[in-house]
Length: 120
Image 1: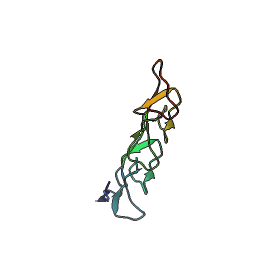
Image 2: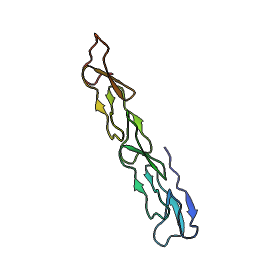
Image 3: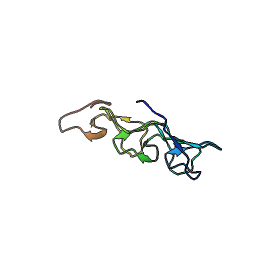
Image 4: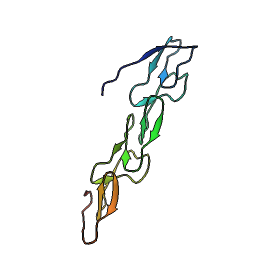
């Protein structure tokens, strides 16, 4: 992904949410991908925490079956063979023996079937 810095002149001495400015600056700068500023008048942007997706103005918790690392702009579905059972996961867990894991969720194997740990 390519990131372009957006510069905006400060209006009434205040930058909007998603923008920040340094001390005595006359310009607002857009937060970089993976960071955000929820409030106006920010002097810096905050790194997006693990388990969340972030736009320049908000953070949103990742749903069950998804995960994200710190400074991520989006939540990703856990790969087949792994799952996340909780919202806000920063990692995916290996699929348990006797279960199947697809699209980030784990379910028991059908009757008469078995799978080793980490199977999809």
